[in-house]
Length: 272
Image (cartoon, rainbow, N blue to C red; front, side, top):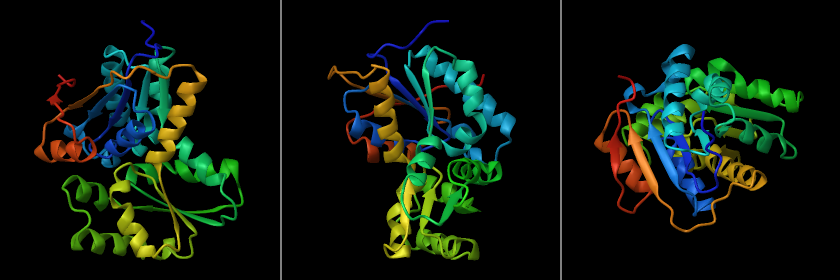
C-alpha cells in the first residue's frame, strides 16, 4: 500500500451531503494553501437513518477513493459516520493517511470550557443513538449533565435549502423548546449541516446559550495536527475538487455558496 503522507498532497473531506461543506469552508479559511478534495455521498443521504453496517461500508468505499486520489488526510465530516465508522476507517487506512473525525475535537473543546453544568446535544438519530457525545464528555468530566435530542427533520430541511426562513424557524423552535433542553448552558450542534442554521439557533436563545458547531473547532484541530506531523502545504498553487455520488442542482448551489469561485462538480459512481 502506498503512503500518501506528503505535505503537497490534498486533504480529503467526506459527508453524506452538503453538511461537510461547512468543515471544508472552515479548513479553507484556516489553511488557504491546502488542496481540498470533497466527496458528498448524496446517493445515500442522510446517514442518520442508515444502519451502522451500511455507514461503515459507504465510509470505507469513500476512504478508498480518497486514498486513490493521494489524500494525506481523510476528514470524516459527518457526525453519524464519525460516531459509527471512525475506527473502521482508521483500521482500513492504516498508515497511508491521517484520519480525523468531527467529534473528538468538539468534545475536548467543550469540556475545556469553564463553569459548564448542563450540555445539550442535537443531532441525527444515528448520532444520538450511538450516545457517543455523552460517553466521550463523561469520560473527560463525569460531573457534566448531558441532554441529547434527535432532530431528524433538520438535515433534510437544510439539504432542500430551507434555512433562514419562516419554515426553518418554526421547526427549530419546536425542537429547541423540548423539555430535555431546558436549563442547558451550552448546545452542541452535533451535525455538520447545522452551522447553516446556527444564526437561527442563536436568535432563538437570544445569546443566553453558548452554541458550539464543529466546523471551526475541527479546522483548528486539523491545522494543529498537520503542523505537528510537519505536513502543512506551504505552496500557493491550491485547488479544490468536488465529487458527489448523485448530482443535484441544490448541491451545486450550496457548493458555490461556500466556494464562490467557479467550481466543477463531478458525479462519480463508486458503488457499481
